[in-house]
Length: 590
Image 1 (tube, rainbow, N blue to C red):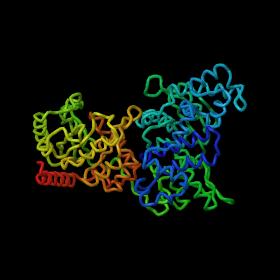
Image 2 (cartoon, rainbow, N blue to C red):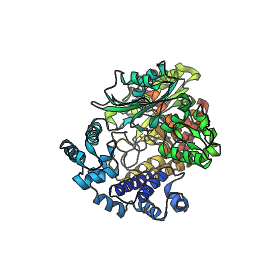
Image 3 (cartoon, helix red, strand yellow):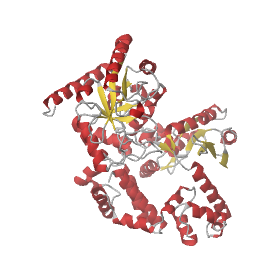
Image 4 (tube, rainbow, N blue to C red):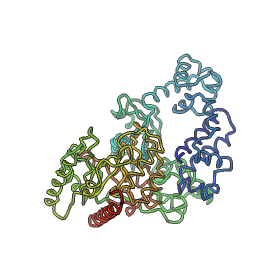
């Protein structure tokens, strides 16, 4: 079982134990262990093998044995028993604001509530209000929360969140009473998906700013409106969807502390507060202070400096080693969108793209890129107008003609997004693959294969010497389609062995490879490449979302292939092609 899934199992166990009324310290131990696993500095399997996991703080002997059992067998009878004892609908109640495990336990014990439907029925019948510790107001809030979960409870994609918060942020910044304003929360940390939108501003008088905010035309409903905070619902991108947006106002001398606090993550904030306490200081969302003085901080950099830490970019604030690195001055200079010199996984109207080869090239040049790779689909993907071998040769001629027209300042590379077939073979024969400048191997079918078979399928494809990059490694579509079952650590090992790059597919609907596995891949020596999977000129701009993933994975510019200048890119691709030809010639099967 992979690390992320093990962490989720432990988190679920802690929550179920809370619902059952178990000792709070035991429940918290499961939650803390889950958080620790998410931030492990190395592959879990390796840490078990070399014994280093046993020394990780927060993982005691009992939890260690459970983690090892899950990692090695994929099973944990204790977890299965807890799940069997707990009606599955109870966990769904946690999605309602204001309802935690203790309230769920009371609702279940007193009213036999086991689902959202049960909860709605009890609320509409007035039964919740009669429970001790609830009351009529709580009952009304619960009913409203159920409606919210049904229409607005889902998360939204990062680019949708940016699009929603952008106009609000611009309006707040333009307000005459506002000194400065920034987005906060998981959006500022560039998380893959976003729950609520958070905006922070500073002002001498926050009240009038909030009065104007709740009067904005996009506000569908006001959830709360006070002197320093307002919460509203605004329409999302799905039909009937509403998204919560919280806006907070502070005095300007509080802004740096509030920005750090409301950016999170929770685990990062706890770690930083502990560091402050160890230095005789107290850090909260409004101040950093000792017994006799307050420490003035105009920026977040000042907050970190006051705690003897290098500045930690928001994308790294997940309590995954950033505090220790900042203490040692080892936070890398993270890659920026401007560092990219080109990209490879892009489509034209030769397959399922919207734009011509020349339009895609001109779009790349307008973004300041030195090169662009066109990787139209291979022949088996008929639904995407995959190219036959004859059309491949025609496209090569068209690319040659364009390169002659562009001259030495820009280059179109000849690529293919070649289907990985069910048995791990590739959709084009080697003699055709040898003619491309690079090959992106991707899975587009048979997503329901068993984990071992899918892993073997991808590993076999990676072992083909003509494969340059692995495309969208898990096949997921965020909030739409789950990743297929695959052992990504085994895939990463194979990529390292065969010198195959792994892409961060920058489409905001994919963001695949994720930051956790991207970081692991880099530690194994795998080269990362950010590709937009662009099917239009506008799609090239999705590169920025891939850069966000790379930043969350601690990548500097030098960690990515497509930050190198054109001459270096040409040299490496040529070296890989020559190596492939040699290996293919030496293969007795060829």
